[in-house]
Length: 470
Image 1: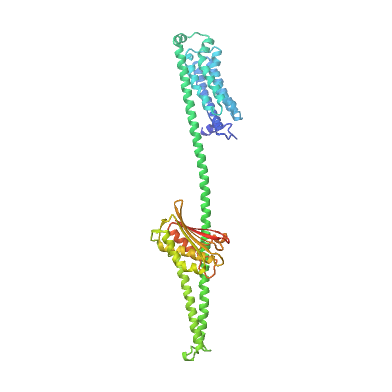
Image 2 (image 1 turned 180 degrees about the vertical axis):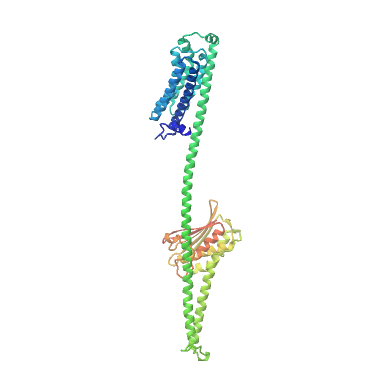
């Protein structure tokens, strides 16, 4: 039964995209089918009763047959795509077949005088189910006027065309105005209520559709963000692997570069202490020149070993940053401390230094020693970048911007290219020879422990600016 119901409901819906028209077609098919089944059951019951009672077939039975044929025709019209014609037939023809037709040929029962108007009032709901008033206002008004006129005139038509005088008519005529006013009021109330509920339903459906569309867009955006996060995660994994590979290569390279000379020099020193047969010579048999060479070699071994130790310590410092001891630091005091450290260097190298704090009492919550270390690293990089600059200028400016404190360190050195900027915060990356490449990486990590960040901007041959943002 469910398959039959679904098949009937979807007659004529193929290729229909408009949700309102689609719903109208489905409801029209369902109402036609319900009316068809009702008339079929009623007809079967009537025929069986007539057979059992040997009674005569009246116009009422014929009316059931005609209405059964009409609903069958409506379903056939929908099946072949004439859904609008099927809908109009369902709206306008049943009252003609069931009420007007029999009345006009004189088939009227006495009780029909009272229940026909109320049957019309109930059936007048059908147009509201099948018509979308916002889109089909003219058709809706015509349908409502059609049923309203029938409600007003049906009893008059029955009296005019009726072949029998009805005693009930004489009784109702004594209060007919009140009788008709009640019917009109009931018609208006029921149809106005259904209309209002439909408008309310349309409003809620539109809101729901809008919300669904918004959710669909949000889902699309979330999916895109999820895909982007997954892509960035993959990139981070690749970069992390690449960083570790670089780290291993750098450490291996540095250790090997230090170990090979140490090994070679140690071997040569050992040979100086041996004779041709490889036996260690007595001290008195080793000449003064050889002794000096051995001493010099040992000093070189000591120096290279110390360099290797310093490199390992520097490497360890990247993962051994102490927890910040936060306290209030006035930027004017911080800048003065660093300036005193570099005052002699600035005078020696001819650097014009400028420091400024806006407002003068601007302060941050930070670890003095760690932040001072970051500024020292940035000062040293700035000095290295200005080695080939004639008029050297270095500035440090602290100011408040958008609820954040910015400390900007600017120089007028050779600047940093875009491809280098992307890598300068990587551990062990450096464009300078004899440099461990951990200064900026360490500075960035110190800033991160303060829940702050370090940014850089630069123009080639015009200088660079490193900004500490708290």
